[in-house]
Amino acid sequence: MHSLLATNLDYLRGRAAAADVRDPQLAELWQAALAGDGEVLRISLQRTVFCLSLPSGKWLLKIYHPRRPWERARRLLRSAPAVREAENWQLLAHRLNIELPILVEQMQPALGLFARPFWQGRSVSTALDSPTCFKTVAKGLARLHHHHWSDRDLSADDLLFADAYDGQVLPLDLGHAKVGLMKPSPEMVYRDLQNFIASIPVKYAQLAATEFLRDSLHGAWLKDYSQEKLVKRSIRQRTGQAWKRSRRCLRTVSDFERVDRSSIRRNFAAPAPSSEVAVVLVKSGPRSSTQKHADAAWKFYPRSGAVQKLRKQILLGPACLAFRKLYFLELLGFEVAAPQAWHATHDGEWLATTWLSGTPPKASQLPQIATFLARLHVHGVGLRDAKPQNFIVDNNANGAPTLYLIDADGIRPQLRNPWRDLARVLAECEVQSELHHLCSRAYLQTWKRMIGTPAPWSSAEIEQKTARFAAYFRDLLAK
Image 1 (cartoon, helix red, strand yellow):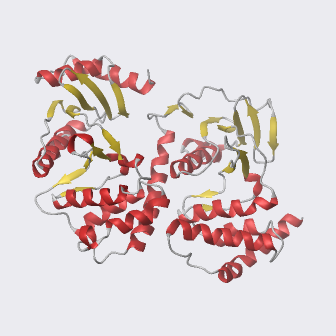
Image 2 (cartoon, rainbow, N blue to C red):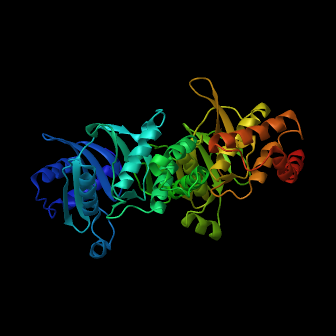
Image 3 (cartoon, one colour):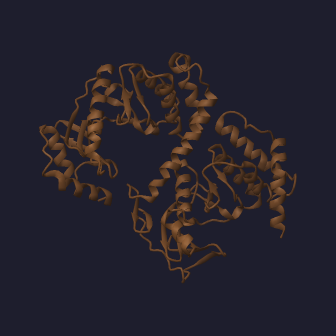
């Protein structure tokens, strides 16, 4: 059993004696959940979501169990999340003219149950490659908006092509939604569309924006908004959301566990090697050293003293930051060495990543690094040290070489100087050589392919802006 699920169930069982459920069907679902039956769909310290089977069919059960000391006071100011979601569903189902039985009870200020029939269907996030996906989603969202629905936390994962309703696009979660008396404002509709595009891979952004802003759907409603603006703002939002969400790797959540001065991905059990004994020394330097231990690469950052102790306590040590940055890139869909553990000691910090067998990029593969860098820059992410030694080329099952970033120390969640980043790649090439031009061309082509519009700079402008930085790096490499 998932350790977080076991923790939640122990907590709920401890409160079950004082939690009287009046509705017989909801009580049956509640007891099944406490017994650990069914399938767990989502889990956190605040909420556990089950799919449970009863003689009447399959049900979705959400158990809200926030563990905040001020929860009783919050109930005086705002209705409980289970009650809010039930009210939203009752309004939306009535307006969409669908039958939807709803079960809800708030047994305690910090314990509520919400249940509805479980829908079969296909999640929108798994149907993005379908040629008609975005046309159908655009029509579905326009229909929901015209029925006064809006969701400030909308994502593709929260929309379903529901089989029970002829494949209609329906939201799976109304916890953060608003179903009001008036139609949502253009700003709210634009925010919803922006949130949706921010939740899908960037390669689909232009196609989604084109369908969403058609005049027959949202176009007349959002006539003052352009596709280009929607795409760019969505990408920036996607990056910001991923950086915010990356904090979860430093907390106890469904896939990470925080223990003392460590954070470990669940199912990763390899202990950190000693800082004094190297198992297999891969690389060593004055500021860090890397060892291979079992199937993981362990990087040690020797940091001691009062200032470094404070940095480790406030989660700003170099290994902790690299751990979070790698997870951040993983959330954005980049090829990186998967972060597995972070551990602080009195004399430094350890970072564990999945061991990737492969070779450093060759000179002929520098355009691949430029492509990787362009993808980062489109997302608004910087990489100050885009040198070949920080990457590895790994052959996948199909034999195609894949470039992975294995060192995230130079990652900056906010792009500040793209020219310096690109110049570090160009410095590996001879000035104005064919390889130099190939890198610049790969960078520009990647930008255009991802955004759908040309990069805001020409090849000549790139050469001019990177020249000074490239010369600086070439001098360093020559020493």
